[in-house]
Image (cartoon, rainbow over all chains, first blue to last red; front, side):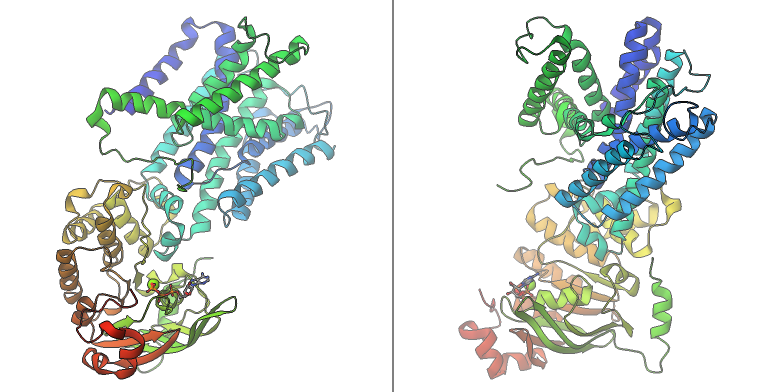
Length: 347
Length: 274
Ligand SMILES: Nc1ncnc2c1ncn2[C@@H]1O[C@H](COP(=O)(O)OP(=O)(O)OP(=O)(O)O)[C@@H](O)[C@H]1O
Ligand SMILES: [Mg+2]
């Protein structure tokens, strides 16, 4: 077994055993959040590493899953208040998310690079205003009191395992795709779309298909999130959180699938623990304590992002890969290198 | 959505005499105000080997792009085996037996040599959704990829990422990408450029060994390769066809001498326009 698989397996086993010794707060709050964010980030990393598509719409799909479940499950407050059972609502929400991803994917698939980025950002912004202004479905106040299935209700450890299982499913699926005919074709499209078309591939269709597949997993993360959180409002799918997802992916390494969860871990860890570190108090100036924590966090994440992009364009997972090849140089001498060039090839 | 090339082919084969493999009918291409190809007519029969010559900027690659579907002509029609392909996208061409190479190498740099050759074969056969999670390299395609790679001296590089190959190796693979699909109509855009002398000789051999019914359209500045392989030559200058004849005639044609071969003409080793 190669080092990458070995490391992933070890981390996986560690995560399975974690509830035995971790505190309830660490497992049920921090790590569940890491897994959910990692899951949605993995859908973005999949699209960018295998498909060359840096999408800003994955967070929207994630959010739509939450709003969909909220509208179906809630019995009071805003929204449709359908009062459905949680499990069927989950299925319907996943269908909605996958369909939405297909629509966004097929409309964006003919564009690339900056145009693709702007188009998916446009969808994200539209989504934000849609749920803000259409009070039939939510309104800016958002939705509260959305109960998870009884199985997960008041069982944070069970929800943790749910998030872990979904993460494992996503990881294995995306890895399996990588070596499948579809995955190879997708990577071909990433590298040379014009050649791929002249070889006989339907390039927009391959892109759309990948986008739809990613949308399913973004939706899955969104369902878990609403079960964990019990509430959602449009602000949580605004531009800020949309960019946070991109930041998570870049910090972790947008070319390595593992980087999605690694980036989420760093992001959530920084968010939770930085406010407790003494001596960072001067950052953020004279703003009140609660705001101060957020300011401090943004500043530190910004610095971290800067550091990583300068030192290691392929993020924290790239650092790990480099450490590995430094220890065992011949192991990666002829590895199937996928590297990103932040200059875009312009010298 | 998908265009069924089988029905297209049947439809094309419907009329009595077998249609020409390739027919260009008054093809013109204009980029903005610039006329790059003007009213080119050309017909290629089965098994014909045609060299397309012309100075830099004559419009040769653009003509290729029209045939391959990467550029829509401003006027005129393109028919491949009797099927009007003028408005059809490039991705239907492999189904009609067409394969092309690019003058500026276009390879999937992040994938291995084997995966590149695999994709060329997969593209021709069409990706089926049921193949989503099956392992990508199946025996037969792997064997063919390996055979082609060995023929191009890339046998020991099968697992290497294409981006890590030398320029010469990439040029070789560029040709391999077309050969591996076993095309009926092969379009090669300056395949010898970037190759060493030995590699050029091997390329000439490979082209001479092509099955007799393969139709070849070759853009080539290297006269030795072009003249050895071609049984007919056309010369394109400023977008227009100025000559159509045999390799021996082209050397003695005064107009070609003047426009194309220029001062260095006549010795058979001219590298035009450079
Ligand atoms: N997409 C395009 N837009 C505008 N002009 C173009 C485009 N493609 C080609 N041209 C111009 O058309 C002319 C013919 O180009 P083309 O590449 O077909 O020449 P060529 O005969 O292949 O030359 P070479 O021997 O250098 O490869 C050139 O002047 C080129 O600048
Ligand atoms: Mg050219």
